[in-house]
Image (cartoon, rainbow, N blue to C red; front, side):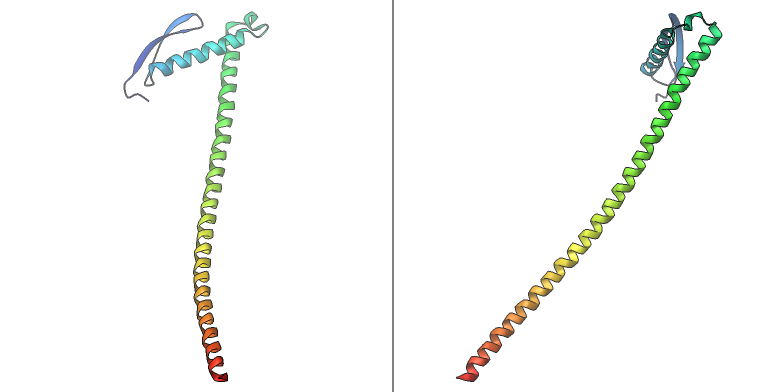
Length: 136
């Protein structure tokens, strides 16, 4: 969002209107393009042009409100999806850390068992040597 007020002339419904605001000129142009699209959409509905100006304005406003609420609902759905993905990512990170800790503990246990095995192998050799020496 810009920090200074912008003004730009736009064409809405065939009329030149000056829009001003703190948004960029491009943003103001996109708003007018959207509004022209909604006007064209409503105009294409059978019987729309036979309505009074007040009724046409109300129908246009209803269409815009419909777009707004659908976008708001979609935004809420996406926000819920993001929150769910964040929770899943947290759970996966927690699971990864737990798995890394278990893996580290198992590696330590393997090393301990290797040392124990080596000591037992040495004892076997010692006992076999003693046995040979004893029978001689």
